[in-house]
Length: 135
Image (cartoon, rainbow, N blue to C red; front, side, top):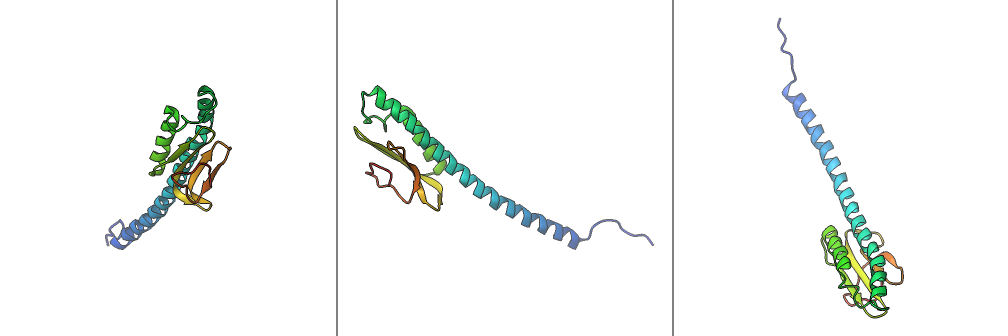
């Protein structure tokens, strides 16, 4: 008797199904990691604005009025918007400034990241368009 060597159709289908299940689990994990990475990018960009705002304050003679229009702050805002897929909010007056951007995925403490001139840097539920401090 001569035996054929190889796999049956059922064995091949089972192996393909197992590989498909494992691939879907891995892809789900990668999406979560990507969203957390985007949140980290938003936080980093906004936290770097604090130092730039102080430089603006010093060069503008003791006023925060130009913070939101500063080119480096605008670059950080654009990078945060790109990472989150949303639109940042920036307000500044003579004595204060605030900058907030939506996070890619909401965290337990909020869906926005906010920084301001008081040193606050935290997640919050939302930021009003006319905010002057982080809520």
